[in-house]
Length: 184
Ligand code: IMP
Ligand code: MG
Image (cartoon, rainbow, N blue to C red; front, side, top):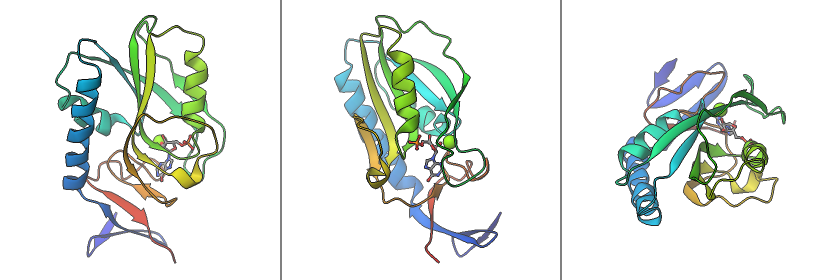
């Protein structure tokens, strides 16, 4: 990875700073406060969608002030490309019993909405008490399905972004802030 004047250069692609660590962390605190209020008296299960959501989920629950549990799904759709294959595969099932529970699906980003739609279909075979979706980022212009995202950190334009859990060909997840692909 070469980082020049805050820019990340990957081959011919140039990624520029988009959301700082401070902006991300302060928004996550607000989201966590809201969720803690909304679920007061309940013990929700946060279900992270791997791999992308692991950093967001970790920072989010550190700011949650009520008791909670966590579990993970692992999905794959993008492969190593910047464009979704439109094909979602379940690579890791849940290990908890969601029946009668309040579940919060945690995503790094909702793009076309296909992944969330796929997860909602899985849950339609179970009977959780409630189900909401929480995503750090959302690209409203790219959404192709009729979905309700209950907690959204930032609505962003339809640009490809990396960092803070979001990858390009499985790399750059370790960046503390988020970078967007700049137009050529
Ligand atoms: P969707 O199924 O099209 O909504 O895409 C959701 C998944 O694609 C997310 O969980 C991400 O892992 C990945 N994704 C979507 N947009 C981006 C992006 O801009 N950068 C990196 N990963 C992305
Ligand atoms: Mg991903």
